[in-house]
Image (cartoon, rainbow, N blue to C red; front, side):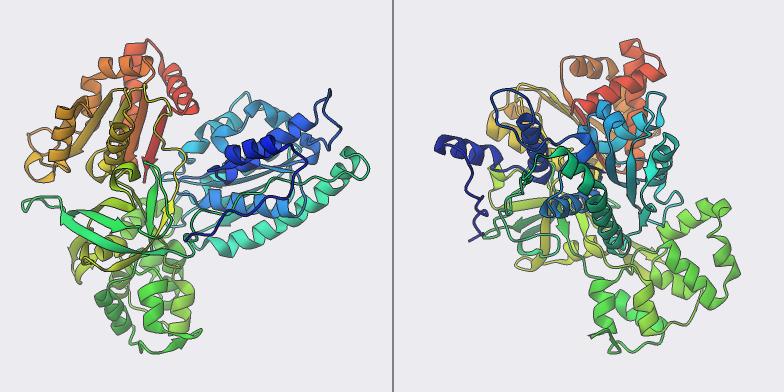
Length: 597
């Protein structure tokens, strides 16, 4: 049985109000609870019939704002807010798209935790916040004290570009940087933990005198704390989910091996909503682990910090993804000038090609260098979980989670290569236990109003969450229409969930289906082409209040957005800036959501 929610302290409230409070907070996530805490404090500060209470003014409050694509920034921001609350500090936690921009001019203490995506872009939930900050309407901030923590991947040329932009812009607007910007790589905790410690210490010092001046004598501030989670399982403590089914979706003639997997969550207490992701802790293929140790002539049983080298390479270190810092060290060890040149800014394109095409074993074979077991483990990136959009609704499948996974496998000059997580999933047999956790995706939610229409753009495995959307809307009896745009190379071999979509159309659970099979004709046709063809219809749906969703590769997401801008400009009579403002408005309303990777 999952643990019961932590009991709240006995409050000075009538019994019926206690019941209402319990109902109100039931199911709220951490950001919602922190927002509610600030809202209640604001009400308490109003004059009138209410007794005097400590006022939570901008001058005596810490605002923690986060922008997150995969959940990492959110987790760190929640951690900071919880620590600040436990220390008795007045704090509010806000996702960037929920931050009231008009309040920026009044902020006194602001921490921003934000990731960088793709080609130096902000995460979707921070696009409006960053755009406002960088724009002409951003206010002067002479009274602001701030600090920024960035999350990124040094494999990309524009490492932590968004955090740098935010940090430099806040300073340019007159804000005072409390301490140096943190720039975390994939080994997040190495930078994030000391940054959070410094942030908490600085917040204590800055808010102590302000809070004392603002609060009446003897008054205390007790922030509302989050209830205990409904399930004990998490990213740090994954649940061992039994694999119930592993079925290939693509035909024999396809160049892709796409799998439909069904996992049991029975007994875990794990719950998810359509749009959430399932995290999987991968394990490197044994053949790859053996090849790396053989190439370096290392003994697999060599102890490293209490565990044999084989365990480190199989379960704790990335072997299928290279990073810039490791390439730099490897080039120095082997004296490879040509490899070192690829790390120069002018060679960004060559570096991107190398990182996309080479795994660790390919690097070792092309540019040999000597490593000790201890140094190798220290230099390699920690193995990170992979996230997969959940392709089901719990209202339909119960204590299960379904996935749609593209098994990454190809032949390299040195042998067969695989993606660590997709290979583990594709190779798993029924009855096998896989370590998983739920990763909420607050930005990718169905409209609360079932009368709203929904447009779903999901080529390839990007269609996964929309299977869950259609199931959910059918189960809840949503009256709004649903329009799916799907794309793949060939209709005959790559039409994922073809029978299900056809049955949904027949049952009235899907109202429109437009397809783009890129290789079935001389000219390649993608989903963005279908969007342009049906631009008038799409714009009419949006004008009628429809919600728009895009899921899939980041390059596709950019192409689709370009098509959307054209459609809004052409059929909405707007120039480029006006079209951008239209899409930004949809996003601020929660009517344009993207899950791109």
